[in-house]
Image (cartoon, rainbow, N blue to C red; front, top):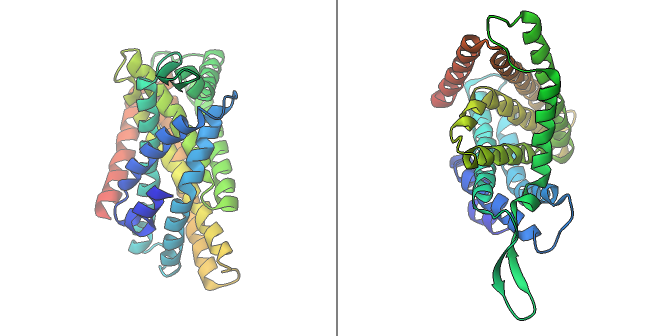
Amino acid sequence: MVLEALLGGKQVIKKPYLMLFFGLVVSVCSNLIIYPFFRGENAGLLAIAFITIASMPLIHNVLLREEKAEARVPVLCEKFFERNVELIQVYSYMTMGVIAGYVILYLTLPESDYALVCSSKSCIYLPNKGYIFSEQQKALDYVANVAAKTGKAVDSEEATFGEFFYWFSLIFENNFGVLVVALIMSFVFGAGAIFLIGWNASVVGTWVGQTIMAKDHFKFLGLIPHGVPEFMGYFLGAIGGALISVAVTRKKLFTKEIERITIDSFIIIAAAVISLLVGAAIEAASKVGYDLFAFSLSLIYLLVLAFMIIRM
């Protein structure tokens, strides 16, 4: 692939922000390419599959390099955290690129088919929103229906701990399920969790595009407090499973290297679960009106995360 050849795993590790450009270009091109050839109901999922196929060689290259470095690093030393922060940055920038790509598509694509070029026999059409975002819209409608059935946010004076823990368990159960799937996909396919991360990014990008089109331009900022810990949990889960997968494919079974990488992976997965717990607590608190608690917990999480990244 041209982009993969231009970037390369070594360059991406040194300059992870390049993945922002990569994610944006791949997401836009994937959606535009499928339109002339695939007109089925699930074309939106096919676009995510294209994004995954385009990303896996590059991500696998990055994971292979990081796995080799990880095997030489003692557990919980300073270099251990530094290596994994680099991987998190790669996943984060790519996710932001996919989100940005879907936002741009939602803001620019027409509501109905628009003929770009026409000849005497045929026309080349620009895809419409209903076609590109049909699967993402189904996901957003499902989330809205669940929220409507399970209740609505209440004032902090009326909220009880029971309501808080109800929302907390509901949100964490859903997010933990996504983490388990990400772990399985990353372990079996190495970079396979890209499909799941790309899907979540496409849904977020669609929702952000809708809020901007609805003139509620800054509503999407409400995703940041709980969205950052949740996506961080998925990234960590994907990294933990992928590192073991790469080590196994390199035939490192029953060696000290696989033992060290397995311990590191379990630490990373434990951090992923903790991150999801924090995200669920923040989102649940905001739903029942515990705004001060949600703000404080979110601020602490973001400050700790920023401190770790700056330190590395």
